[in-house]
Length: 218
Image 1 (cartoon, rainbow, N blue to C red):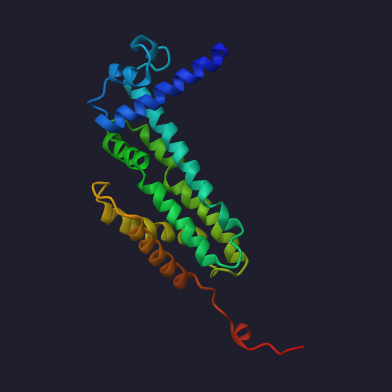
Image 2: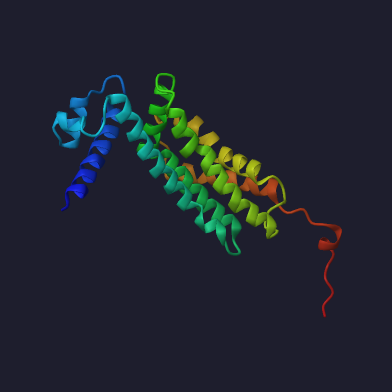
């Protein structure tokens, strides 16, 4: 292994260890020694990579936030070519988005961002770069293509994306109580089906009088 590769691996181990400790203990209760122990490195080694706990905290959250966003963006790929059963694809997409929203890493990330954002204003940049707005922008692009293809009613795709995500996550946040209550997959599926049903009722293409007339056989 080259020295540069070893250095990158050690840095990654520190970042992963840091997020694990921060998620378990919170920012205030965590110390650099705890993180060094979790990462399997000597405490002085930590300062070769990160100047202080605040810097390490922000970089650890940024890495997890980017990974989380990439996972969500990948879930949207089937919407590029959903085939004939748009409802089924929206349901599977919604289910995967909810699953990612509910995993332990995502809950920990959101709790840490919310708890420390007033102390560390730089966390706002992480939210801007990797938060729900980025997911909505990508979803809006997919919905816009479906609108152009006549699969959905033509409207503001950004607003439609915002509403679809709200239909998925609104009931979820209320039921999970900030991850203090776990919901089983059956309940998740019921919520997702209800969200997609409501979304498609609102977004069904509007037929013109000409569209609704039966076509003559040729």
